[in-house]
Image 1 (cartoon, helix red, strand yellow):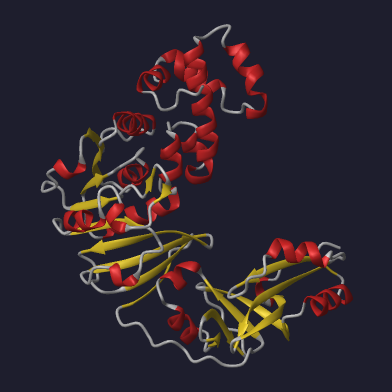
Image 2: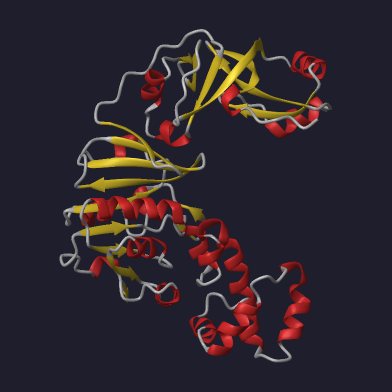
Length: 402
């Protein structure tokens, strides 16, 4: 059994023998774990081998969030890998703190230290607080492993008992998972959202990490709400205090493209599908800023309930992906199959919004063959189930395989 949640086993990994063993496992293949464990147990204690193998797997998983250079020097717990902030997102937040003139942050519910690391690299000193002894030990080891121990102080205690007054900013990342999985009620966070908001209000500048699906009506009026996506995937939402009360922002990474407003525009009117279709970034949709994108592309909705925009001319924007539409048809599987076969489409990207059709099942039933690419949008237009067929707009279209 893995010993990745055991403080004594983790401490053994920090010894010279433990570190050397872990370093030797950087490129090991989990498929050969039994043979690897048998070999290593001839030279090392069984518990140390078990802990090292568990940690090696966690490091491999963590590469997606932290990059190989950091991940293979850091330490993790299973929950830590799952809940840690992606490096690109943490770095963006740290830059925002630094741009506000923040020099010291109380990082409450610090986990394994992902945000503390980003803050320290931005030149900010951090008090990292968590109540779990193993998590604190991991955060401390990570600060040391990355050469940031002078800027990161780890304290193991209940965050509700911490005096944050010596710090000019507070960052709170409440636990949003419990024994039964993801927690959707903000008051069931640990600590609850209401406590976290009060804690955030005690400092000149603060940030509170929340789930992207939080209802807009639950956002305090004195907070700025920011939704962040990375390479098109919405990663988190943040409530900022001491910045721009009442405003909403969508930030797209990489690139730091930001769309924000203090006075949201009214929803654009729906209209007929034009030559181009725009798929707004998820952060834009979560932030309720589709109307702002519609203004930028001089577009309209295809349906008053669907977050697809359309226009007759192409307008480039970082906040939406543009597609050129060749066909607008009522949904009909037989017609779709015949049309795609006629055009020798063998690779089909299926996107849907407002449709119950499952993309994998659709592709299976179409049984496509051919060298060409296409994209089909299964959606509603003026309330009717519709198929929109086309592909990426010319300036971003991929090359088909001959």
